[in-house]
Length: 295
Image (cartoon, rainbow, N blue to C red; front, top):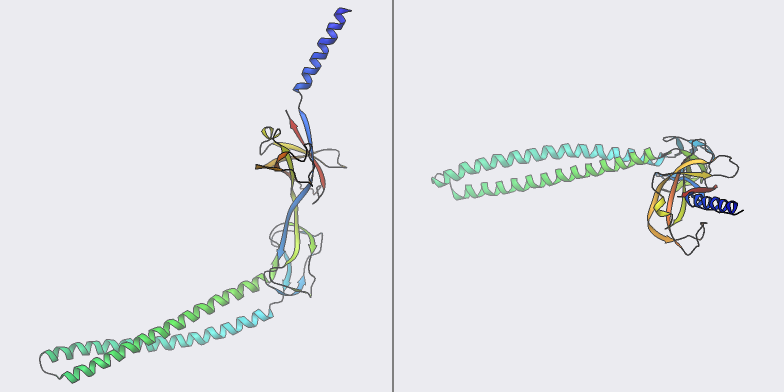
């Protein structure tokens, strides 16, 4: 009887020892989130065509909608006409500047000759002074022509910049999907006017989901970025493989909307879990459970 009691106690001790070595599973409840993108109308105006519907999958570069650009086309035509007029003025001022510089150069050379003759007492002071006045006038004319020439060149640059702006607005009138995703919401319909920079649709990329959980300081040493974890979804028999993508370096109080095994007054660390979702099993906002193991 004594031997049986000793054997029973030894067996119980081994069982307790084995329990200490097993890992402790922690379950965290959260929601899966895709990447949301609000696609804006960079060029405001009347939407003349809407190519997508809610629930439609889009690839990057797909056309979502087209905004009317008739006013922009008219602005472009006016700017092109103004640029042609400036080009003619630019050529005219180029000719005037060349003539003024040529006359200035001629008078400078003539002044040097007359000045040499004056020093030899073969010409009068009056003739030298008259030529000096002519030279001053020629220099002023050259300076004025150069300033007008530069002013026209500056106006040409302004018009070129405006034309580039108009060209960008016309290009942006075709609203393009910036990334892959599903159209989760449309904010306008064809025929409505969209203000500049206002979102026209919301895209959600479900191909890679993120789940944010909050772990205690006790769990922190057991978690590493890149470590594999499991995600469980109601109605699915198997868990979904995932990994820890990010661990916050700062402690914070547990948000009231998040459920964790710890008390709500405990300082915790935010952790982002990343799940590849090629078959779109997870949906945006779907409740999930993240299984972590503490050795």
